[in-house]
Image (cartoon, rainbow, N blue to C red; front, side, top):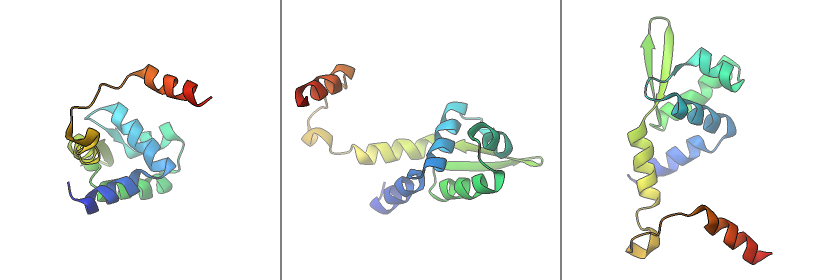
Amino acid sequence: MEMKLAVKALAAIAHESRLTAYRTLMQAGPAGLPAGQLAEMIGLAPSSLSFHLKELVNANLLSARQDGRFVFYSVKYDSMNSLLAYLTENCCGGNPCLPVRNDVCADAQDATQ
């Protein structure tokens, strides 16, 4: 992934409403959801949601498909996987990364107190 595409994707999800919509669609799975149902689920006016969904589609994080009179939105999993790979491409200085443990954060927090 190129840096410009990564920045565009990160900017698109760097908004509370868009992140909420994206996460809801992620949980919905590959079939996605119709825009009206998504608006109800996250408590946004359909016109406001349309603006936010357009931003996510333009950032290549969502796809939209027409089915009759409904527009279904779904996550483009390959795009998010590419973004995550880009962000972690050189993690751990090229060495194999250690598995993440839940108690690591707790240990770090305890050490600062």
